[in-house]
Length: 189
Image 1 (cartoon, rainbow, N blue to C red):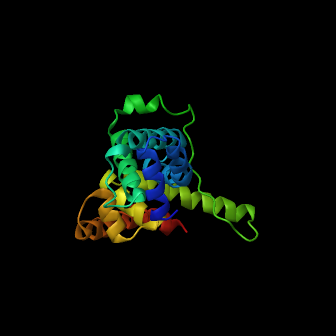
Image 2: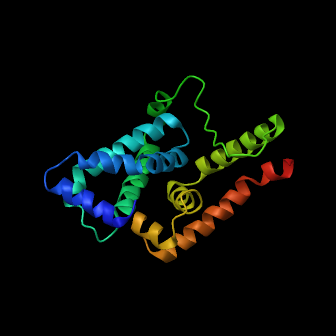
């Protein structure tokens, strides 16, 4: 989706046709959900956070000023929503998960996956998810936006409303912390 399409949808929405928001959701729902999944680490919370993100966006869309892209604005809302979810009390979050907990597995395409390769891939993804969960929300946000979503430093800065220098610093700290957190896993290989 390009910025011109977003501006067209915004104009239609602001002129009273609220159904244009459905197109915005369809254009961004997968990316917002994936961001929330990386930030929160489980499907249930990610679904709730993505839904809350779009609800907040719907409420604020009439006030949106296109000095940033719609994409960046939605990502900022999603990151802040995920940070709010992380601040919820532990007891409340326990009731939001299944008895066994939800396992987050990111599957990567492979030419001919063997059972061993599948197992190894799941082990790597589980270790990465666990390490991401241990990062502070601020560090997790920048590393997810950079490495998983492929945003530029400038887009991350716009999304999080911080300076580019702060983005670079946080990414560096997040990478350093991830190296430490994943050290034991790498040594087992």
